[in-house]
Image 1 (cartoon, rainbow, N blue to C red):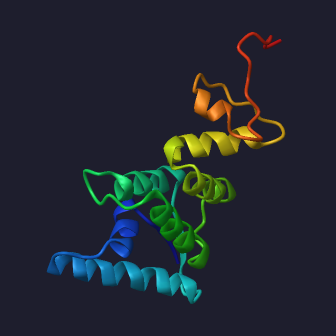
Image 2: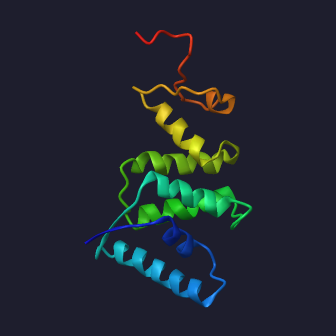
Amino acid sequence: MVIFVDTNVFIRAIVAPNTPDYERFAQQARDLFRHAMDGQIELITSEAHVSEAAHVLTSKRYYALAVEQAAAFLSTIIREADIKLANRSIVLEALELWARRPSIGFYDAIAAVHGRAADTMLATFDYGLRRIPGVNVWSFSDSVD
């Protein structure tokens, strides 16, 4: 069986519950990931859902987790539950980059990782992204032809 994991399932598995409903959701989320680790089910999600989880976990408005902590939790869940993503290696590498350089944000970490691919250039005006080692930055003065 294949199950798509929504953002709130990641959140409930990671954040300490503060209501009886959240306690139940936390247990259910952890059980779901445990079943995947045991090979009983296959989990999939999207880059967008991991990005949303990263944002919600670290937002001062919501849970205010440290970037390093949020990145570690998400990486661990994705790896240990063997969650399938279209760009799984990019997402995992972006989580590692974001943990090392929290100021760039997770969305920009994804862009930077894409820009590290041998056949990909990153078009950006963001000077922070331009300074990340290994990122192939498109020069707007270059010809497209």
